Length: 67
Image (tube, rainbow, N blue to C red; front, side):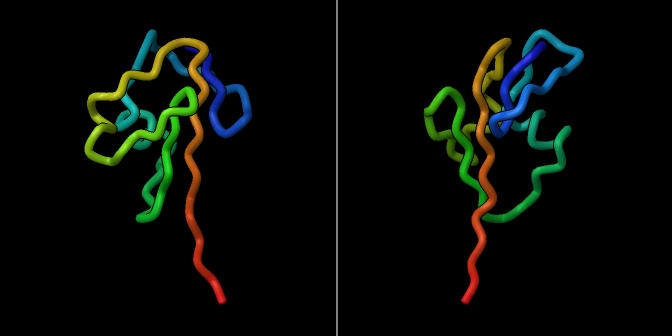
């Protein structure tokens, strides 16, 4: 499966996966994350039920605070 992840091409050895599986594979473990799949925001409680398919556009943004 090929998707766009954070504006870069990414390939995986499966036909589809959940957002939760993608987060685990890519080790996205930050506490403050914004996730969008095809420009739709995905809430943390929806990660395990949101399916990522071929050619999907996935953005995972880590929020930082500073001063």
